[in-house]
Image (cartoon, rainbow over all chains, first blue to last red; front, top):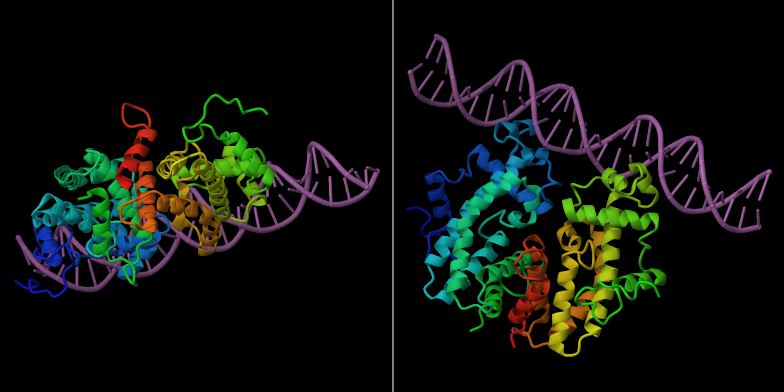
Length: 217
Length: 217
DNA sequence: TTGAATACCAAGCGCTTGCTTGGTAGCGTT
DNA sequence: AACGCTACCAAGCAAGCGCTTGGTATTCAA
């Protein structure tokens, strides 16, 4: 059981399986691409670039260069550039869903579960836990309608966890779907202003502030 | 005084100057481009296209075709494609700022002022009042650092109004800057899910729900 | 030993892109 | 009548793009 005694854990993961363990089991299940395979390395490089510069401003030549191959060789692994984006989003969604399920499972009270959801998504958005997560919101329009559907299908359970958690906590308004949408907007926008370094808020503090607004005690 | 008796007003504008009047006075001041001039028509067409398909997926040929000229002729009005985006953002910011100032001036209590801000921004985001507003958030990264600065300078007063209004209402947390950031995220994300038609929420109802969360009575 | 599969290279095709250049038509001023 | 200004056209350039094609090295099972 290597990796269990890993020193650094992210805040949500305390008491849960390690990120590495989680990913390894998902790879073993066959629902996630092995990050050490050629395809996996391409997906990671693409995710990083899409997050940094956006989909349209990233070229296949850059993605290829990032893993040390020529641009044409990419198309032995993906049908098109959009296929790369779609695959990145699918992988990110699968991993984020597993992480979210694990996060709420480790929380006891309804309010603690909501806190775990918020923190889990914040960590995903800021690349601490799920590299490429912010692409899901930022580059949604770059995806064809068909690809959008394929990602949405994977995202369903992720959102179901959210809705049940919000429904369990007593949030004002009594409309979990609306609360979720406002929360998603508020949290994902933090990607463009939150700086973890410095004397400002930490991610955990931010999560608590958000919790205080959306589920006042 | 043509246009004053305009039948349709947006919700925030009740009792205020009409959108046409406001824009006309800003044009007269020289801070806004006349929408009937060649440059103004190009800016409007570009704003519409950037909003629909995004900056990167819009070509200068499409913008030109929208106003019935050839692509090369665009560059007698703008230095580059990015200059078009920057100009759109500047114009949008100037107009939105004037509208926001007018909105809070028409509200009496601190809480009403916050409500007016929220509704005003919602109407802007959904293109009912300020076409192209959503570009400010969606395409921010498409702008060079210099252009970002030039837009930020114009945006300062807009954000100042927000911060003072939030500071005046008693929002939980006691951190107007954080509240503003969460609000901006929540409101601008509504662009991707809110459908005004149908039996769902209206924009005014949405504003009230948001107000209830961010400034509970 | 052969054959199939995987992963990649080398070269470049066809197309689109933002943008340039040189010239012209119309209009108002002097 | 001559000038200058604005607005635009016609044509196309250079660069960059996603992607294709034909071939090669390596691996591994039969």
